[in-house]
Each structure stands twice: as structure tokens, then as C-alpha cells.
Image (cartoon, rainbow, N blue to C red; front, side, top):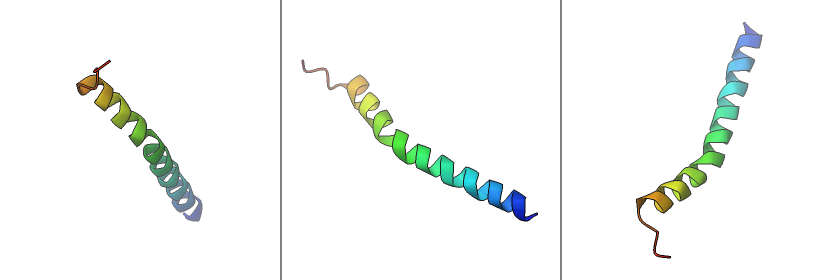
Amino acid sequence: MVTLILIAAVALLVLGVTFAALAPVYRRIGNAVHGKRTR
């Protein structure tokens, strides 16, 4: 039971870190697509 809780905690931590790392990239892509084509 303790191992399952540890695995779930690690999985949530990894998901949170990856989401935090990918969020700015998605925002950059969204800005580029939505209309910052001024050049």
C-alpha cells in the first residue's frame, strides 16, 4: 500500500513539473498562431 502511494505521489509530481515546463511553450505557440505575425 505504501509503495502505491509513493508511486502516485511521484507520478503527480512529474506531471506537475512537466506541465509547468510545457505551459510557457504552449503559450508561445498560441501567441504565434493567434496573430503575432507582424513580421
